[in-house]
Amino acid sequence: MQKELHVCGIIIENNKILLLQRSLNDKSEPGKWCPINETVEKDEQLENAVIRGTKEEVGVKFIIKNQIKPKLFDDVSTTVFCGTRVGKIKMDKNESNQYKWFSYDEAIKLTFAYKYEKLIEDLHTQGLLKSNKDLLLKYLKIRD
Image 1 (cartoon, rainbow, N blue to C red):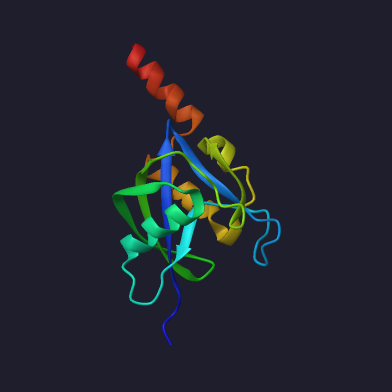
Image 2 (cartoon, rainbow, N blue to C red):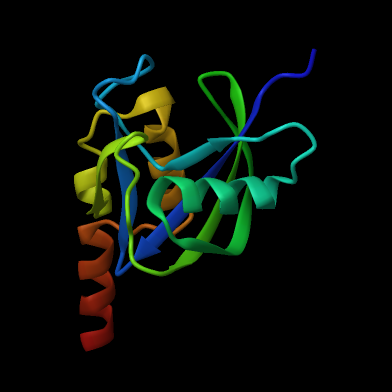
């Protein structure tokens, strides 16, 4: 039997990452935060799954920019895609309680579902989500 595959859609704008708070009625990890994520359906391409999941969860078109190698979150293989959105966010209240944009410094203080805090750290390490300190140092370097 093949294990479930998952995908994540990462949208970062103005150095803030879009995160969703899981529904308070959810059986698994209620009220915890996570990126857009979706279970890959049988015979579905990973890219199509993340585009579909983003449309279902936040109502926008997801334009894939790059793919990060698969990671394990709670022992589930998850392929992470970074991209941009087209359209205004219209959240599905059945899927999530709320959405919010977080800086790295704000995000690391959240309680995450499925150990997604590891992903936030990875994005920071790769320079995709900068801390306030990183931004300040860059600003000071430019001024020299």
